[in-house]
Length: 486
Image 1 (spheres, rainbow, N blue to C red):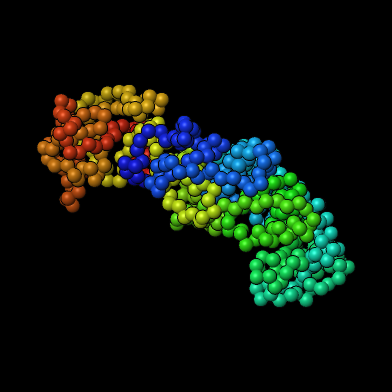
Image 2 (tube, one colour):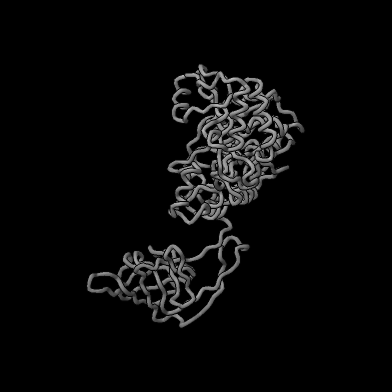
């Protein structure tokens, strides 16, 4: 992708008020960038968690193991790490594995790999499934207290009733009747599979998330960690506040898309009789022309439209790393968004511009010529075979060296050949000047071969065309992009 002059420059460092710092969310708290991706002076991450005390903060990053980590998740992960380190607190990685239909151990393993790639430092790894026995005990307690009931209303009818604020006919079942149906759900019987457990909140509340949400559903699919022990599983809305409180979280970071469900979160905690966990909202990171829904990304994988979750066209962490993104660039990009609650729709160009500033000063240079319609240039006075050792990056010795072969026959791009005139002097990069004496074409007028001679004493400044080239030797490699690479 062509970025232009903005993409060039020295290694990009984040400047604080007093000194330069590496890309690290644990230290860079006073950095902002303007719309062109350059470092500015306005603070971004200099925000506070409400009621946070140093040494007492406990946070969690809770991905669902139903896909790989993508760029949107990375903001949540890095933001959790930032606050945990800022307040010298704890960070828990918790897998929200309550839907066995979508989840697998493969996703768990790759999520841990992605978390490591992001450089996330955590204190513990837990699973919501670790708390299934306690969650079932809590559900039974709520049933006996009249704060939850078992409903066998068909799903479509239930959704319509929730939208219209109509109470289910099952809402007034006695606790004994609800416990009887609850045991049917536990057994996974034909009767039980038609039921779900709902919280008895407020069917007339303007906030529809409070209109008797579902707490448990039957699911006959075996769980990837615990097998077929259970025939029913808690919903995220029920399990999340319980596990947050049980793991002694002080703050739960959630993207602003969950804003309308915050009241539900607090109400469920209240009904459970558990301590309050403070919710802190941040804006979800969205990228233009990009699917970030794991359900939609899964469709591409299952239908063979991509190589896999690590396809370089995918917005997953593994995909963009495979495409060439450095983690320093992603961290800086996330830093620019800060902890703002305003919705963000970001351009990929901005991320790749930051990335180029990081890799351009150190990235090895290689030469490529398009295979399609490439043209042979014969230099009549050139050596038959001469190998010279030249640096891969003229300004960075650490990039190493490569062997370049100089021969009488070299390849150039077809469109470069079209722009050359007879008797024109051109510059061959990393070699010198040459003068084109003859241009050969086929009957259709296509350039097929150029004949010329070296003019190494010529001035590079005087030529209009500076061309890349490759020697005509068997050692050339054909890449995935149909280019010859030396």
